[in-house]
View 1 (tube, rainbow, N blue to C red):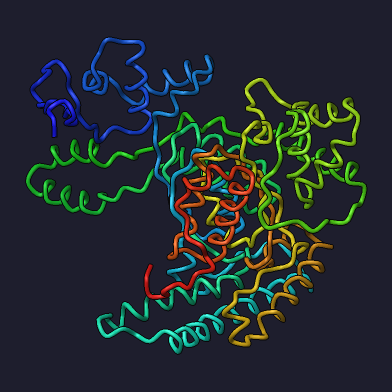
View 2 (cartoon, rainbow, N blue to C red):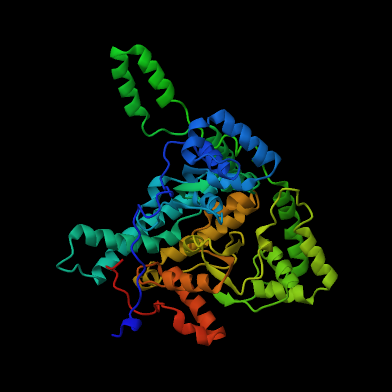
Length: 518
């Protein structure tokens, strides 16, 4: 190869090549103190080490009160990261908790854990309605347990264990596949747990949003998150430190007292940054008015048939805004809503958009529905269980409709093939209970809806995210529900932009899958 044709490599970089540059990790500073120290870069020539040495909680609180709350420098809270555990909340509430675009965390997996053991959430119901609620949840759990066992045996009969695969690995893999099927029976009341690591600004927004929610369980979670940010954090090292203090006290009592003050003081992760987080009146008042506007525009129309995935056409921004604002507060497809919105006068469309900003306060961010203008907008109708997986894609805008039984439910192929007729009976009983409980409490009724029932969500994204979701979620190791949806997204893009189809590295979910490969 000629010398000029060779790819030139950059010269190696030595850690000593620029001695003026210093890079180091920071450990041991409380989140708000750390945020203060980082914010000092814009207001002081001190190094991070010097800033942290001179700081204390009182100085950090005073600084944050001035610059964060009085001057509105909200980006400071992006610098304080907080780890939180949220345990024994319903799946319904978990969906609400994680509905943040700037959220990082993990939730219990329906693939790898038996969810019947965790119990379920019981809303504030009385008498016959409470009895019906319990009976429905217990029925669904019993069917879930029976189907898990049946599907494990069904899959084992059709998938012999290879000689080179250990029995425990074989059983673990097929049980995960069985749970993938039986999860359709889990009701939204099912308890789960999750952990999150978020910055303090996201936590403040999350708390405010949860305190504004329609469901009492979710509002209580908002209050608990706020208290967790303000109160003492769990100290993993506390037990070991207590033992160390006891040993020191035997020989040096005064030193032990000093060590205890320094090493075992309570740490509060975000006491200043979340203390003013309250329910958002803008969100609450807007949510009170938009359902009526949606009902007026749709005028009792029947829900029209729609594809599982619909890549929407381009349209004027004012039509998109009006249609999106209504979409969240009904159960019609976006295309059906848009047809009605297009038929309205310009002044009526403006009235709808005005509803989205009428109650906006000075410091309120616009509703998510105003995040508009993306080229790729998919209106997706899929089972709730599959939606929970798709919900993790936060580099796009998601506008979700409420939970309902109006769109019927999905039935796994394995259930049909195995002749598990009680599956359909369980779905029908759950829908009947939902309708009866809704007469007393529409919010409580949603908890008895199984994950098999479908819900609509509007996903707005750029080309890179459409490609990413299609590639990742069509992988053969994934759940068939979202694999089909992701492949349908690819097919919609291919139909609209055939020249771009070759850039997608997707796997056709209709092809056979080796159940023993993850």
